[in-house]
Length: 147
Image 1 (cartoon, rainbow, N blue to C red):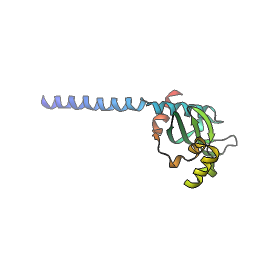
Image 2: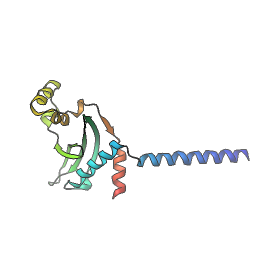
Image 3: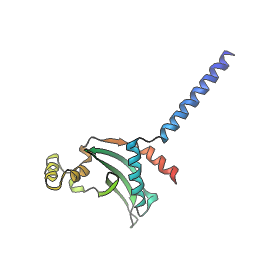
Image 4: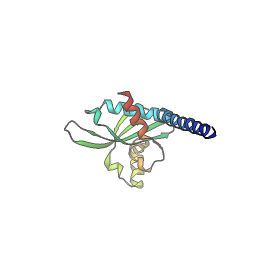
């Protein structure tokens, strides 16, 4: 009788843990919701939306602006797989990264900041930025269930 109660308690505990895990996969934080909005926009504007593969998503807050950077690959109109980083500011698409700035040194980045403004450099120096890394698997799962 005692072992039966232990088995029931263990079973209920396992069910609770599994339920909590499933719920936490579907719950999105504010940053994750904003990132999901940007990923949906990106996917809708691709020539081959189903070819989108997410690698990394990061958000950075600068003053009252939230910048979202999506590292992704997709099939272009020529059938080639390309890899890029889409940049968003407050949910609005800014463009793709500029590779000559992307690999610039810290000093070169500061010089570009003086010439082009901090938002441009912020969008092109993600490697040096502290920000919030978004759980890509949660975003992928949400996109999968929206189809």
